[in-house]
Length: 263
Image (cartoon, rainbow, N blue to C red; front, side, top):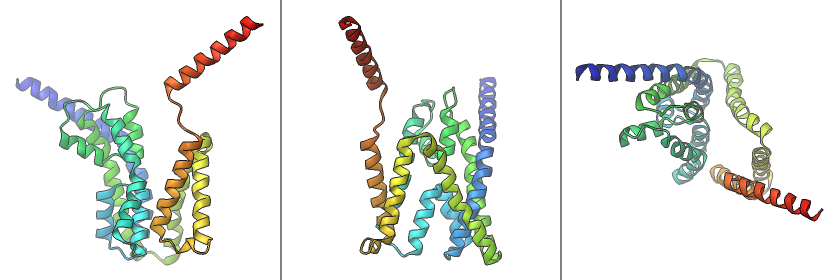
């Protein structure tokens, strides 16, 4: 019995180490991005402790950036909550997809912890694994990215109080560069994504410079632009499921066959 227990513990440690290895590149990338977020948070008046605590409990770049920006403008809490919820809503879909790959013996508490640590990059790495995902591997995969995100924010926030203004301004551009880096690859390879991104950008400009519309609070502008752009993308470029594709293929073949017979 002890031999089986020892073998099981060894397997768990091995899976944890593999997860750490897979998460190392993500953690390094998160450190660089969260450093810029830390500077942004410090410029708005947040202390290094609050900024790093915010990163530790959120682990989301776009959601944190939007939420903190709304906090700086003294937006109502409901407006902040709805904005961050919409931005982070994709994580629920990722978690739902990932739950189908988890080992059945993972407890509810373990699944909730894994759900907390799901990000775009962690999901992308985990979902490509051929084997079932156990708790030890997922814990290892999450550890360095969350650590890098938190420490990067703390370091950036401290630097925000030390570095000259010119340096802080230059490093602050990294946050916007991150969003461009996230958006451009899928936009170049997918016309629907490009359409949604372009429409959201156009709507943002309209709301920013149109008299009357620019009086709407920033958070609600983000919410309205997100809903309109997403709805337009869903209506104009719906995802075609496999059965639909097969039906279309069968229909095409039937038409070709009918054409041959008529010919």
